[in-house]
Image 1 (cartoon, helix red, strand yellow):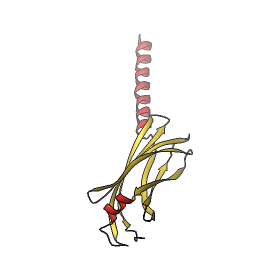
Image 2 (cartoon, helix red, strand yellow):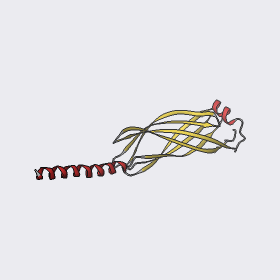
Image 3 (cartoon, one colour):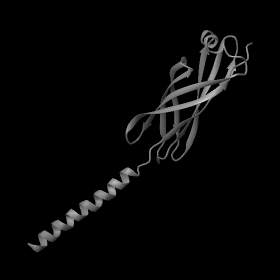
Image 4 (cartoon, helix red, strand yellow):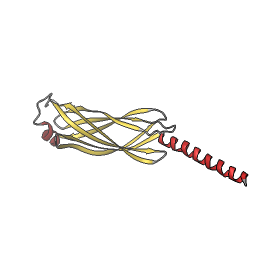
Length: 158
């Protein structure tokens, strides 16, 4: 009887100890990270304005991390400047990081509405919201919301 009691106590102690180790492993579980590093204006002419969103993605996993989709929205003041989405066909190699560049075009009408009241060279404050869809090997698809505020220089009129 003492043997069964001792064995049962040992098993319970093992379960409790292993449970603590499993819980610690879960809380220390690393997840991929992403940040919106920059939004830059690359071209402005009479037809359109081209912006580029620069997104850095870090992969702590020992397997590649596929990036599948990006959605974006950018406002100037309270006015919506641009919104949309794009498919991404990129992978972050194990233990590595990459910068993904997402180009976005603004039409001439949107350009005039937003930038028409700014003098060429003026700093224009913006807010950018970007969602990066990452296909993680452990939990599956995850949308990583990213935000950035900053300023871009008003393009000169051509």
